[in-house]
Length: 80
Image 1 (cartoon, one colour):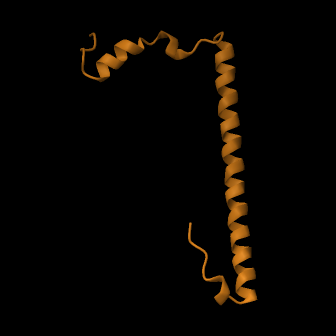
Image 2 (image 1 turned 45 degrees about the vertical axis):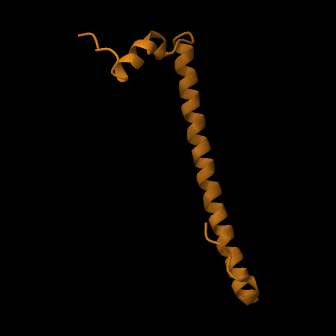
Image 3 (image 1 turned 90 degrees about the horizontal axis):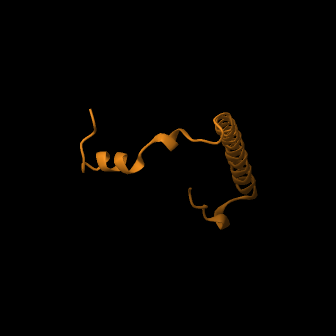
């Protein structure tokens, strides 16, 4: 984010233009935020639907996390 210019040196027209530019940027950021929230809502709804379809079981329930951690840290070899 850029710092504000020396406000005392700006004319009223320049101040109004700066305000307009910043308001435009704010509207763009707000629009992007709403799009992101919409995508997050869709993804969460999909996750809930999948968990409901499996009776609340996650696909990770069948993963041996301790064994996977040991494999990834090189403390044990994966089984063939």
